[in-house]
Length: 198
Image (cartoon, rainbow, N blue to C red):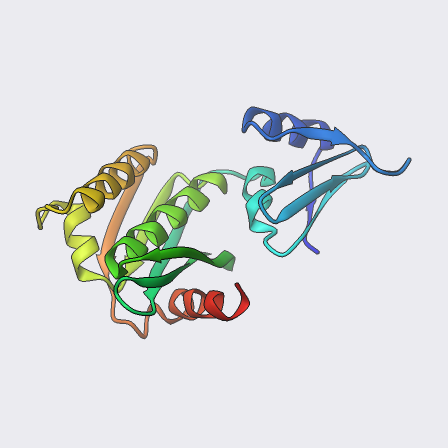
């Protein structure tokens, strides 16, 4: 279980500002607790412990040392096209992997899964407070659509592209680049593992 050394009062404020309901603790030692997705944060006197199957659903909001740059990797996977789909994402700094995750997203096409993975990865980078991101993925189509090198004719992909571009504008600086699949192997692995672990 990850723990975050932070002032529980400030952490409570950050969660409330993000629209997360903060509840009373379950014991006399717990100051408060909050839930989001598959994560639960429990505050004690000088630390907040995050538990659950996807702690990253809350860890980014509790991170105190915001700012800085991250490398962001994303991948979408489909079993059939369209078919059941899953996504994977990874945030990396000079300290190593800061956060990663994967999840099933229902039935869709491969390109929509790639966009969903990209959107989730960018949202997580925002939650973790990064101000600069360098995005890497192995889908040339998605990357060239985001940069404007390719047109986006399919309406759903166009909506994804607009949403991604809006998210990117919230950063001080960003870049997006195609990388070979082996460079993106961790995000690919997480997307495929999501099928097995649901």
